[in-house]
Amino acid sequence: MSEQMPDIPFKSSILPKLLEEDTRIRFRCHTAISCFNACCRRADVTLAPYDVVRLKQRLGMTSTDFLAKHTVPFEMDADGLMGIKLKTDDQGACLLLDGDKGCGVYTDRPTVCRYYPLGLLALHPKGAAEDQQHYSMVVEAHCKGHEEDRELTIGEYRAEQGVLEYDEVNREWYQLLLKKRSAGPTVGRPPLASLQLFFLACYDVDRFRRFVLSENFKGTYALDAEVYAALEQDDVALLRFGFRLLRQVLFGERTIDERPQAWEKRAQERAPVWEARLEAEKRHWQEQQEARMREETTGKSGDA
Image (cartoon, rainbow, N blue to C red; front, side):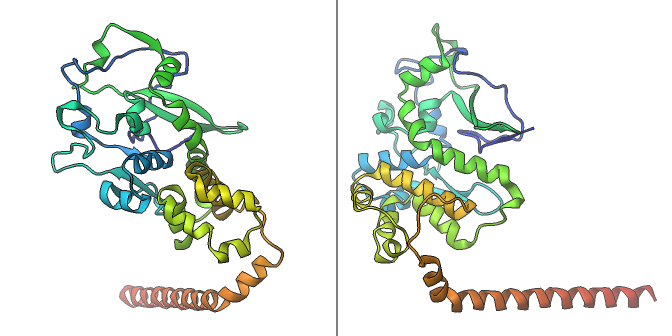
């Protein structure tokens, strides 16, 4: 049995045929092909964290502004873990398409666009020490690239499309998603604060930076001044730090050292909030029990 990461760029309940790095494929896309831009005019592009960094830098925007103007959120699982997709116009065309010229941000295009017509799959077979990366072929009726007279390996195609850097930066994010899916109910639904932190750390890196550089955060986590300096200047370093922090928040892994008594101090400060939540949960539980008792009583009366 194996667990499958959320599919990129498509979703399916059926595991497709798995392809390897040395699998040879036949494909070529170019400006003279009859279907040029057709995939961009019916775009369904899920963004990974490094995609956001590259695009917001390319467009000269903050991550917050980029998310508001160019993306729409969606739930990746039943627990409310959020993903984001590029916005399209009413006909489904990517808003970053520059007319008939093609992609307006081509050198910084997202991972999904670089991989097309391949899908990236991360699997973690039961008992395996590490996750495994495989690929699948996406064949759409409109795409004529499969009819081109050129063959190359998937590895050669990935290098040609400049996807290696993207995969290297996003790898820990893929592992987070895979671990979340593999753990299933054993982890439980993350609290709202953890879901919000996931969105900030993975997508809204500029707001996440303000959170990491806050005095409250510095008072909780023991990080060197050099680390904070890197997080202040380097978006990729900030992403990687965010992935480490999420492993600690979502799965309880000790990835970042906390200051002595930091937990006790935070617990003391948050005690009133936690107590209020506990009381609310107790009331909710009591109301559920009373409702069940009423249903049972009603049912017995009806039987009589």
